[in-house]
Image 1 (cartoon, rainbow, N blue to C red):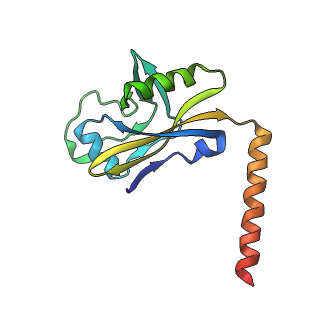
Image 2: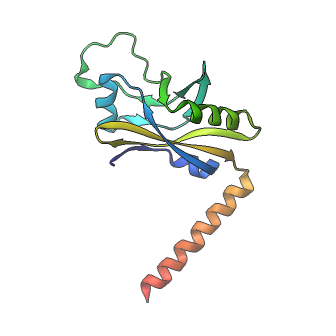
Image 3: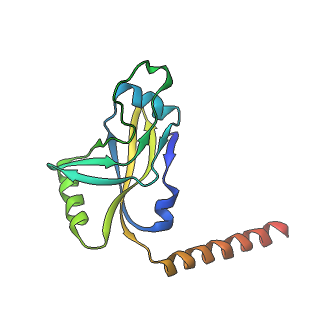
Length: 148
């Protein structure tokens, strides 16, 4: 499962509550571009329209060898492929106050492009500082154990 893109900021800005694996509906040249690593999840999120889930604000750059692509929008909404039961569940979580659905990573699995999404709750600034302090302490502990 080679990783194509990560949303590192999601782990910093949000507390991850639940994870889901889903398919991602892409055009042919978008698949090639994504497999070349030309995808960014920075600022991306999941929205719902007509009982379908969409990845919004993710950027997939234009594939260089695709030729002339008129009116190609790299940040267009792309459908996220989930079961109806999962979509209903996620819509319920999305409607709850303080919860959002964020993409965590995009990867390949048996030639298919998959996306990992999560139900998340936003962190406050003091929570972010606490997380940074914990990481610093863990890093120092590993260094001191490694040096001995």
